[in-house]
Amino acid sequence: MTTRGVVYAEPDARPAVEEITLDPPGPHEVQVRVEACGVCHSDLHVVETRGWGLRFPILLGHEGAGIVEEVGEGVTTVAPGDRVVIAWRAPCGDACPACLRGDPRRCSNNLRARRRLHRASDGALLAPVLRCGCFADRAIVHEACAVKVPEELPVEQACLLACGFSTGAGAALWATPVRPGSSVAVIGCGGVGLAVVQGARLAGAERIVAVDVAAPKLEHALALGATDTVDASAGDPVAQVRELTGGTGVEFAFSAIGAAAGLAQAVRMCAFAGVATMVGVPSPGARLDVDLDSELFMPHVSLAVTHGGDTIPQQDFPFLAQAALDGKLDLARFVTSTIALEDVPDRLERLGQDGEIRAVAVL
Ligand SMILES: [Zn+2]
Ligand SMILES: [Zn+2]
Image 1: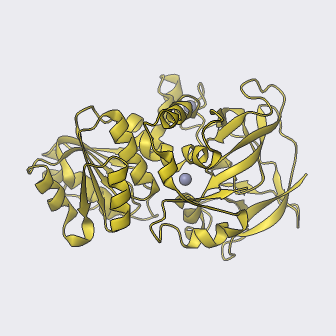
Image 2: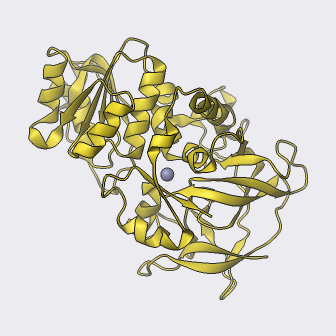
């Protein structure tokens, strides 16, 4: 079968739509006809880091949803015709220390399909980003990564559950669970940060302070559940958050930007015994500048890291989808434009500009 996909062929090449071929799905693998895939920052990160450690050629896209088209031997969880969100996390269940102690949210051994897609031009095996490769008409993933969700949820919204939305919401709901009635700060109100705002609201936070330098993003944050905003371009955001909270700081601070300064600010915004959570993917070599005595130990601040919101996709994605259908989450607001697959390389280069939250490629 020949299809199309966005291929990043070599370190200095610009990603481009190419013809690709695929082998049939193997045991416990599922072939999905991709219907939608969001343009997430991690795909740009792959280009900016010249491959993010993957072998070239690389197939981009990891925030996809679609319809199961074919299943391999032994697949029992989904059937052709099912609408699925393609997860890049799929806890192994029984083969890593975290899963063995009953904590699959910290699995270090995610299940994956074999690589089955090739460049049509030379037959080279493609490395799909985060085992997904969803900027393509077809994806082949492990059945554990194909998460059934209700068809009533529009597919361009459903795909956001695959990465950006579940990463942000999951950070507040599951990675470092926000307590009802607590205070929260979110640094960086792009797609992931705004999803932290939504997760914190769903968790019952009383105060949610959104921090960004861009006014349009702060407006989105207010519409999505933030109770206060801090314009970081107008002065030290830490001082502003402290002032808003009567000098005490917040119980939970999330850094949804990759820059180390964001995490340092999160630490400094914390109240006594607060938790600073690192949600954004950092640049290689970035270092944290925090005074261990006065800013971490004495105020008893904890530092936490989350990968993708530490979700268990098979249980959390349907939960989030239902919450969206029930009107408790506003996924629709996150989709600020829909584009064609051909437009993906261009959009990657303009990511986060023009007040965009998410551009979603609809195939
Ligand atoms: Zn595991
Ligand atoms: Zn992503």
